[in-house]
Amino acid sequence: MPEVRSKLTKAQKAAILLMAMPPQVAVEIMKELSDDEIQEIIMHATRLEGITLKDIEEIAKEFIEEYKATTFLSPDMDKLLEFARKVLPPDKFAKIYEFLSSSNLIKSFQELEKVDSKVLASILRNEHPQTIAVVLSQLSPAKSAEILKQLPDSLSVEVVKRLATLENISPEFFGELIEVLAEEIRSMGVSGIMQKMEGISLAAELLNILDKDTTNKILSKLDEEDPYLSEKIKEKMFTFEDIRKLDNRAIVEILKAVDKSTLIIALKGAPEDIREKFFSNMSKKAADIMREDMEALGPVRASEVEKAQKQVVKVIKSLAEQGVIDISGGEAYV
Image (spheres, rainbow, N blue to C red):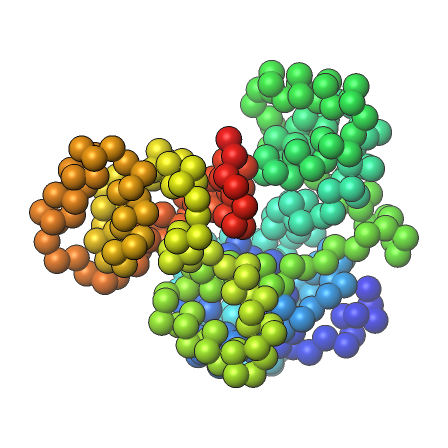
């Protein structure tokens, strides 16, 4: 909405653009920022509400126009572009530029995943089952399940049948389909449910990817300045240490999914109670072999341990998204 965009500061707009980028790209840029600058970005990100797809497009266009005109950019906006150019290979930088300048951001940034499931279901229920199947094939299983629940039973059955027999999808067809959906979402206007950026979730995701020292520094400062916000972000984060909270069924599923060599390195630098959490869910023989492998590994760099632990966390989050395990503290299910 114009009135929302007009009230945004340059720093807030910079935060919005970072949020629109894939987390891995945003993190590469944030690595070049100071702790204070990262904290400011995260603070803005968690407090922005009512940002629509149209707002994101207009802010991106404004950014590109300022860049093309080579006029003075605010320090925040200028830094984002310069850091991206410095830390990313030319081909990746070109892709980011293309993302930002594209009018079809809902496709580029996978914004459909963030649109309310009820809104998507209300639009899709009037489409052909094959079309619905194509859309759901591009969403996460959890999101697709939410949408299916909102559809009439007879339609859901037809969609599932077509999903099961779906073959290769033409990128051109999918692109056109996304554009149509994006236009329908925009046309809903104020009576529809506006796209709302989940700042706290994104902040948690970014902090999970950043190195441990930087994350701890930022959270410490947030604890001092805004304890409530800091706590909300922590609730959304899942760290290697949070494995302590998982039940045995979840650990068994993790053991099935995680690469054994990665797990050995991750556990090499883990607290004893977390090691035992895994060993106790393995056969005695398997646990003994893993202990021997850890011992034979010798000294391991802290950076390698941290990298392996992040890989384990990534697998855990993937299992949670698939509905295989529950990381919220409830019972795991399969």
